[in-house]
Length: 327
Image (cartoon, rainbow, N blue to C red):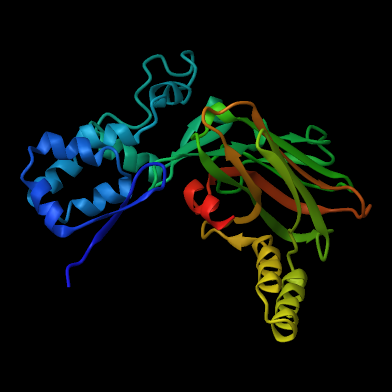
């Protein structure tokens, strides 16, 4: 039986290619193959390198990987350079050895670039090439954040930013972030994540939900998240899952429990945790801004020990085409 190879175009559409057709494509000049591959995705370009020597050479060419890099990359990189008075002869932040477009792409996937005077980081999603940003605490609006007795800035935690913020003691937790849509990849669903940790002797978050809202030009959503250090809410949600599945055995109950599970923090493997704040869609062309709000102001409980690195914005796992088919 002949095996078919599936590829995806940059908009998420799926195309099945017969191996016989791939052989016929192999007869084309390398420049033509590279042009064809430039209309797919980084994942497909990498996979195509196994087809033949010609495909391998074409898939590594600058003609392909230039199309996978953002058209405004030079402008983004320019904001990563230190002020002239700090570095009279600045060097390219990606390094002089990165002359191939593919190397630049892979570097941006594995090593986020600090931009906007170190207030944000920029990276690329490996399989799609779409933009990823983390908004550092200098670009977050934190109520009482500039009051030393409530919050303090710290450089002792390992972070991609020079400093993070640590909550000393408040009863009114309120954090806001915003991002211009034009900086993100168009026609893309994004997910927002709070990147945080809870230090020793933290308190005030046990069994306490934090309200989150996300608003953009395409709409908005609200949800509760859990920053619970002791795992009490996790155990409650796991018990709820067992009750729902045992009692109802239906899809709606499973979706409700899964939605709750998605709002519980996960370890990132770098000493930090992340919790899903929600999703939003970036139109084509992008317009306006997305606003992200976190609040816990109703309980009146004093809280301490929360360390925030930033808010991560990255493409969600589901493509726009798959999302439209599922709704």
